[in-house]
Image 1 (cartoon, protein in one colour):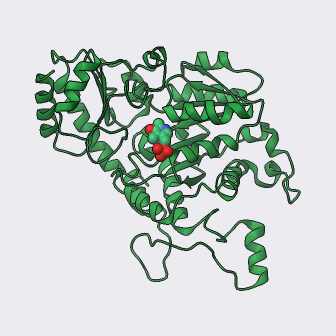
Image 2 (image 1 turned 120 degrees about the vertical axis):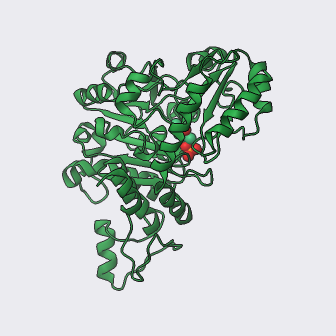
Image 3 (image 1 turned 30 degrees about the vertical axis):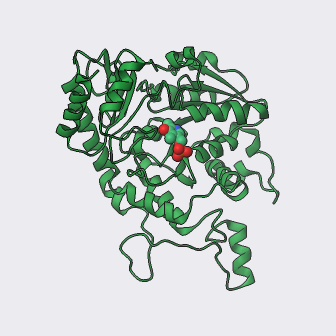
Length: 412
Ligand SMILES: *Cc1c(COP(=O)(O)O)cnc(C)c1O
């Protein structure tokens, strides 16, 4: 089945009342009729016990994400940050290293610096090109971490090339696919990535109404190279021998959900499940609008640079053509100075907010907001200049957005 079909049909559970749609299970615990039934659920992990580890509403969302990203397993979390943390905790131990792309999402860098580093996990940043990444790997590198599209530089890395470097070394390629919009724009697992982490808060939700995140995993054999999957668990089982490629997602669920409790609420799971039904439609429309605006505004005398991966002149174009379903819903403008960016943003009647993927067009000035905690040099390295404005295109009429942009540019 194709994406559009899966988006509305995959993951719907059988309902005793014939509900057409996903019921919300606002329930913490699931009972057992007999002692044997309870013992079996605990032994096999099948069925439901307690909503912290697994609950039917979240499970439906997991089944849908699995289908949409072409994965073996998916697990959902309270936020994108929780998903990233759970995915990495299941992979890494003190003494391990991660090779990560320069210019990652700010809080991912924060997680590396303030949470992982004090526990003895080192992260080294390189340009996310296969050759550079290969050179940066050491004996103790256990993961390569990149994003589908760097924000706000809008660079798409060579995912297939990076996956083959990871496979060659027998380590995981982890891709933050938030910008891939739950597979509607990009499917890194299809290109060989082992693990996708993503914020569902953005395009999957689609309405800026709810937080959520996911870890999505393809079937892979690299897990046999990780010592934690050879150590017997509490029951004396060796995870790799007992579970094979499922040992990694099982560990993500155990650590992230059962033990750390970063579970998604059933109500949020329900909203995200519904959001996925229209994500492809929204992203397609947003991409068409973004392309229209990029073409209309390119060369405007007040704009020093306009970046959009869907324009043939853009440096991201070749990789975007290969890995993305369209040019995507994001573009950036450089107005030359902080003052010009401030005038422009002050004049435009659209929300200025540090979020993405909303139904409304959102604008942000990364220099003073999302990237303000980096040094000036760090910001410039990430492609953030004082005059840069990032635009996450919404569902408004393109002609209205264009008119507001032109009016605001006139005042710069
Ligand atoms: C928003 C975002 C996250 C974090 O997700 P939350 O749901 O806000 O916790 C991670 N990575 C990227 C690229 C994001 O845009």
